[in-house]
Length: 440
Image (cartoon, rainbow, N blue to C red):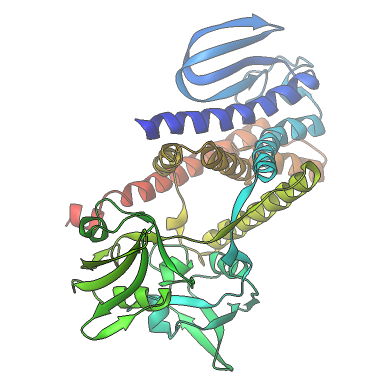
């Protein structure tokens, strides 16, 4: 229920802001707006003002704006206040106003976060030195080892962990390689493509190194929880058949190589040393005990001007990264399984809401708003980007395309969009249901 309510709130706000952008610019340019609706479906209540039906509709997801003469298959009266009767630059402004408002919302939320203060993991700005490497992982099979310094990813030089993670996210899935430095020697390593996952450190099987193994959280269904490991504990050492590890890297490396093997843990809890026996298990192809380590972070606060500048720059970076990944998906060099649909958005919305942190929830809201704006700029007929693309083509041709041709283009775009959404929905379901077992 929490996920559903959070999903409705997130989509409701982002789509309403988007549609308000179209509405406000249309009104400003004296284009007749017939309907401005909060929600979809049948009208529940509302009022008429200035020729517009402001309504609340039955299905509380999103909303829409309907302008006179907006659709190509609509019978036009030739009135000067119809959408198609206005010059191309007017129609361009109306089309781009929706995505623009989504970006404005994202920037506003991010600016607020920067002013109030954001926790930035310290390792983001540190050199990309490899921490623990899981046994039998993609990284382990490629030859990556704890202590390696990553110099480049698929030809892109990296200086920090943040650089490295961005380079991984945009690297071709079938041509993933790293240059690392080990004992003053440079090595070139080639990696297998992660199955159905974006190539990030966790998918490849390695993590950042940490000075201490302090427990941040424990999975309630995990062996660690059953054995009595608690939040705030510091793991001092782990032993297995005469072998022991005391550093964070050594501890996780031993855990990853000990599926179904009981391990002896020495834990510091409130000044007292506690001994626990925990047996690692396999989950999603990874051997673990079920805890998350505390990541040292610093609180960064900025004044209004600097906060706005940083939020605009960050939004630009995320947008550029998103377009790059989308381009790689269409080029076949990135996994289409990275696409997410409404079920995944609902799941993450619920997770963000259950944290009880307004900053986390609104941060996710801002990210969804930014992604919605980016998605609508794709040159797919029926989306704002498709409208903009058609206007640009007409501008270059210096004449309007026929209504019949525009209608056919929109129909093709509609089919493509339905297929795309269907595929995203399938991706969501595949994360919840094992189709191989279901249809075997």
